Image 1 (cartoon, protein in one colour):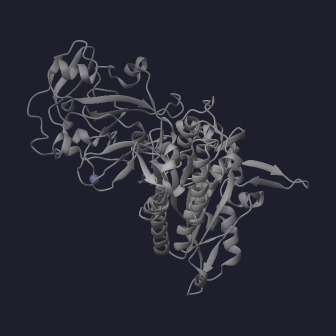
Image 2 (tube, helix red, strand yellow):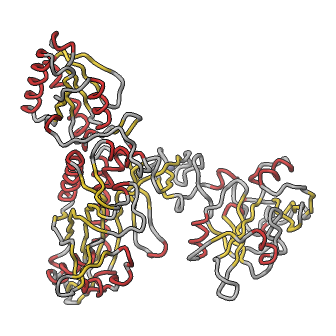
Image 3 (tube, protein in one colour):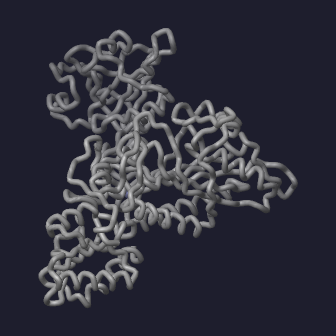
Length: 586
Ligand SMILES: [Zn+2]
């Protein structure tokens, strides 16, 4: 394409409402334009990227024996009423009426529609398994749309649904989709990780999230480069004995008090750091106490709990909340701790507190002996305390796993990063098939509900996540496989006939070789064109300038400072080999 005839609109202006770098770059490089809150126009360059991502998705879905369908985006209310989600979905669902006052919604997801299709088409086990997918526009009326396509209201999604006769069949399909998703993100050229997103509330079902690693990601994750372990921090665990030494078995001699509990004067040492400094001991031999509540009124099911954890760790409140099955978890205001718990904030400990308050201890406390806790009295602590000195309601993993902690699988040091969720796969089971009566008849003539899985990828989100991960101070650095063009051919001086002829010839040659090339033939200054080339992030730049008279051009990769002067005859094959190495050799 010739830049001079294109609808590429770049800008130097920082967009006012863009909070993250990828959103700013999408606006500045003219990839998207906002029409309304959370609703965007996909401009020509972004459309090229999106089509490439969609084609990678299609080829991997088809290879996994999934078949493409297109479901409508306007969906009748009755299906949603059958599963109860017409009410449950809440205000994220955009509801509409036709001229006859019939109710519809703009599809936020398609489980109901696909299950309805399959219940009408499938009768026998012989017709299963089957996996169907679509790449479709969806609408979710987000309360706070932001970050451009990252959290838009209207968005493009690939959603696939598998239908099986058994849990084993679902396992096979799930693994196929897992592998296909790995291929998709690898082929898109983004650095990604897969995290176990299994949620306790859903029971035995599996669920995995595919994350593009990027500093502004909404999810904190830890991962291990040695063994590929990866988890959300809410799910992550570590090897406590590698930090605190072995667990002390209850009832053993080591668990029995060896020395008497002693009350020690610890003036002003109300934090773990101050206390460790004052006692000249390592933080890990101290036991921290924190005070939480479910936040309800005293006469309306209020539950106050204390949580204990070794001073070596921070407490992960989400883990505690899940362990307690609380809908809400908050700290007890420190001025109320004494009255409600019977502990003294800053000098609190589990001994002698209100017996109605549950004591939840992190597993790390099992690794402590003769430890220090607060004495529940200002400026005093107790030392030589052991687990036998108070009763713990339950133990749980409450550790906030951090960079440097040992990997739970192999012991190597964990890394911490932030991720953007771009894909999610999920074993649905029979939730929708039972609600909608999607059944098959088995070999014995019995009717059974069909077993389902669902598999989503945010397409626009993947594009923006790629930008969030691949950029520098000058603009985007597209991974080759999804770049809108592979090469930007820059004519530096359009009034120089030699340069012009050389560039025109090169452009024709590249087109003849099926190279995806954007030809910047505009009558602009070289610096201006180079800035645009960097902002647009085209992976290879070929510049035709003063060396044209010697039959040479400049070759530069977007993500490198190196500039090579190469012969006009060589440059096309050089470009071709770089492109194919990065697309096929990934
Ligand atoms: Zn590991």
